[in-house]
Length: 65
Image (cartoon, rainbow, N blue to C red; front, top):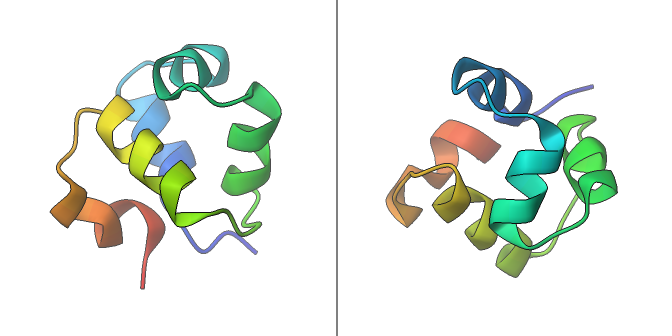
């Protein structure tokens, strides 16, 4: 059911869910939910994109369309 690449990208950066959550200032549960394909707010996506070291214009690479 995954419609995003968050899990794959996070693991390719050798980053744990907890580490990403801390950098993005969201809860690890939020990261888990998003990786399972659940929806999230635009602001949450923005925080995650920046925490991964991507540009906001790369959002489709992480979250799809």
